[in-house]
Structures are given as C-alpha cells and as structure tokens.
Image (cartoon, rainbow over all chains, first blue to last red):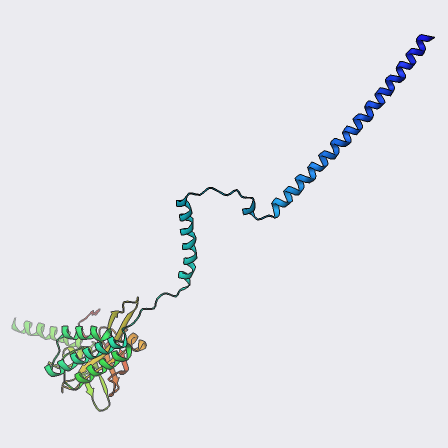
Length: 161
Length: 140
C-alpha cells in the first residue's frame, strides 16, 4: 500500500515538472516569435527606404584617379557644347564685302573700257572677262553684261560672246 | 557607142535631178538683225554657209562654280547679218536659259532684247525639217 502511495506521489510530481517545462517552452516560443517579427519589420523598412532613395545615395562612391576624372569632365563638357554647335545654322557663304564688290565691278568696267579702246576682244579674253563678271553680285553682273553687250552691239568691241 | 554614153549620162542626171526634187521642203532663213525693232533671227545652216564672212547667229550658256555648291549662270544670244548689223543680249532668267539649252543642232534662232539694258526679252528656237541640210543623216 505504501508502495502504491509513493508511486502515486512520484507520478504527480513528474506531471507537475512536465507542466512547468511546457509553460517554459511556451514562453520561449513567444519570445522567439516576437524577435522574428521585429526582425522582419526592420528588414521590410530597410527595403522600402532603399527603393525610394536616389541611386547615388546608396551607390558606393567609386574611387577615381585624376586622369579618369579629367576624362569624365571632358566628355561632359563636350556633351554640353555639342547641342549648341548643332543648333547653330550653317554659316552662309559670305559674299564679297561692299568695298570688294566696288573694286571688282570697277575692275570689270576698266576691262570693258580697255576692249572698247582696243576695238576688239579675242575669244580667250572674252572667257576671262566673263569669268570675272560671273564673280560679281547679281546687280553688278547684270550691269557689266549689259555694258558689254551694248558695246558689242554698237560695234565698239569686235568679238563674240 | 557615143549615143549609149549620152543616154547613160542623161539617165544619171535625171536620177539625181529627181532625188533633188524630192528632198522635201527647204526654207533657208538668212540672218537678219533689225536694230529698229530689236529683233534678230536666222537659221544656223544658212548662216554657216552664207556667201559672206559676216553672218552668224546663236545662243549659249556660261556656268561658273559659285564656290557654295551652286553655279552662277548666264546666257547670251548674238547675231550679225550680211549688212554688218549685229546684236548681243544676255540673260540670267532661268526659263530663257532652259530655252537656250533645249536648242538643237539645226534650227531657226530668234531673239529680242531691251535696248537700255541689253537683256534678252525673248529667245526662240524652231526645229524644223526644212532647216536640216539635205545630206546629213539622210535615210533616202
């Protein structure tokens, strides 16, 4: 009978110990779960902040040599200058200045007067004269051709165009 | 024998005469420069084979590189008739330049000009069979 009583007490004590152990394990599990949850929230917050921040804030700065830095600056400056150059209209062929035009026209008029005095013009001389006349601006060119044709029609210059 | 030769010569002469008679219409136009009405005209063939050393007529174009990718162009017409009357005119009118460049080897040329400026006011070309020489490119 005593043996049965002591066995019953031992069994009850063992059950009590097991119950305490289960409670302890339960408490540990809760604590671990809380830690895991906190860690997950922290990781999520970090991911969101990295998505919204400019890339250069997270990029690690490369280490550049002075030559590489100069090369980058040159490329950037060239890129800045390029659109300005492209925007400029192509330079129009500049004609002779008014002073140059007057000089050329006077030169041609002098030639025509010379051939009037000579009374004739050879085919080669005519080609040279026409080449000079062609370099004149339109108004002066017309004047010179008119003067030449008038002199030839009048017979002041014998020759052919 | 002599009679046969006469017939032969007569036959050959007749053959040539008939060929000449069937050469088509010809209408030579000698060069005329009218300094009153400011008109000059004539066909190239008649001028070239005129029985004198003065007659001529024609038009031409001169083009010069303007150094800017284009060309400076002007044209001219000129003529002198048997009497020694002569005319010269020039133009930079693109349509008149086109007319000059469209001219043919044989043809009638006519032009007018402004007396004050000596600029051509009219340039005409007429390509007609009756201006073509009888022996050139004959297919008869």
